[in-house]
Length: 357
Picture (cartoon, helix red, strand yellow):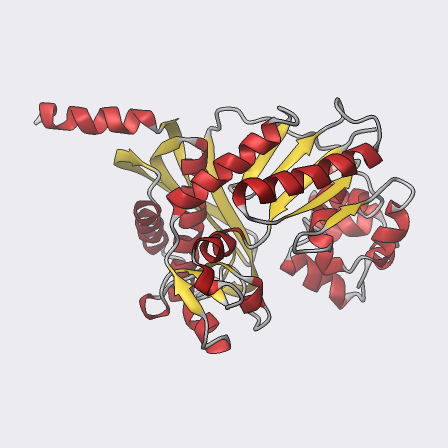
């Protein structure tokens, strides 16, 4: 049996800001673009979340919900430095690490823990070490597969620790609300709600054929996870071919302003991942899936490779404008960089440019 730990930092960007600026502690902090500049919420403190603020929300909407919020421009280099310290704590335990983002990772500790109870103790010590090293809290989930470990880490946020054993999994999943199933997005949740599927127990009643007819290939995944089955391995970092981020929208959208804001926000996430992994891209791509499930992709080659959020966002918006979507509505949008190269090559290219003039 595998022993998987999922670590998720609590409101990471906002928590770093509150740590470094004590006057912000206890206040609703929103990290993201300014409301006056059509910004987007990157993350927010738990004090702001009480007002309904969440990531990817337009900053102007967040301001209406929480007028007393403190808005802060993100400092990705500082966040990356903290992430590096957290990564060092992971490596003290195991090299079997799959980073999901700058503030989240899976650790396979099967080779160092004989039981899940030992893995829980290891996760608790890891939380303490991260707190001592960075002054920040993390939530942890421990289980025998990735889905349950991720679900467990979300269960008692912030600073929570949850263990789900094989014996506990069936009852836990039966009671789990559909919106808490990691991997079932908002569109999937709405589809399931229309047929009165509200929790795992309801989902378990659906046959593989029904789930396939509703969700295609994803239906098989849903059939498995509600039964505690997830065979995905913890994948070690390698040299990726691309770095991208996409999102299924909570509603079909043909509002170009909203789509531009969304792509810029996704570009920021791509930039953070690229900086964290040490890559730049020679091309920017976008992906659009329409309400009829037709998918189109567009790409643009850059004169100079980049991992800069503003540049990626600008090209993504230009590609959106050229896509000529007309009256069609978008249900999924994404952007990314491809033709990757180590970020160190960017400095070499910049140094060479004056010599080529």
